View 1: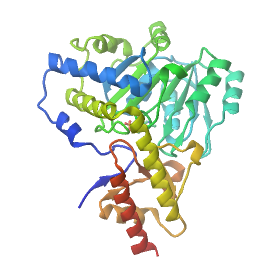
View 2: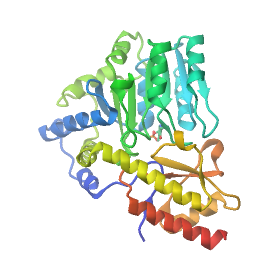
View 3: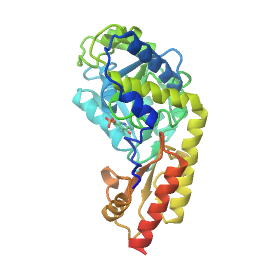
View 4: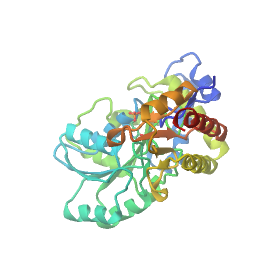
Length: 364
Ligand SMILES: *Cc1c(COP(=O)(O)O)cnc(C)c1O
């Protein structure tokens, strides 16, 4: 039986990338590894939409990226605004509170988004050192219009640093860090970049790095970008052992993506989203987020009356297709289906066939 993993991360990993992962470990200062590390750093740049910003590749999951984004630019009692479209936006609130920041949250209803006028209101009432956004919130499938949001910040509060969580977006959605003026952007290896979980990739603007340099008290050792800058400039240097094999895998996957062309890769994501949603609509499943704010990397489908979450997902799993349960307040009402990374049109057709079978066998 073909097993198909269609959750919003981890996503399926190609044979090519598995091969890169499964070679014997070599020294982290070996020239052969250093060369691949430098290539991986450079190949992240087009995905982030940057030429100048400094890239970091660090062992740890996406949540480490979130935490590093905040610990490197904010000190205790400083003001942070979190724009939240769901569970992962809310995680920024938790991290901010753990770090003793003054956190305000601008939160949308599930499946909706924050409009630009509410952001303007918040920014005019109070001065924020930083504001965070989630490019694609993986709990609701809502995508932030970052071009619009960053334009407002540049107009209303140009000194405010902009943090963007790209964990379920980078690679699957165009990101233009330089053009939009994003200060910190990060992602994880296991979503649209199609590498197993284990790496976070980050980019910091010159402004974000000087903010870090001016900070008096640092509250992370491993996550301090100043300890990592020498390594990212010259990976022959040691700070903490990089995840050698994971970086081999990342470089391979980025190479495959860039080889086929980023625009084509984005287009594939849009096409798979549209194919999936059109077919699912025929089965009675509506996507939670409206079309103009729906992310191309995953769908969050609302169950039609009469279909129970646990039964539906377990029958589908018996047929080899794994989808994810919804999280937070949507638990039990929706399920989440990833269509990102190395997932193909054939994979989606295969999944749709099995979804149709489950509905016929159990629900009609
Ligand atoms: C998955 C995800 C995270 C968390 O990443 P982990 O690798 O699970 O730590 C953060 N933000 C978003 C938007 C995500 O989709």
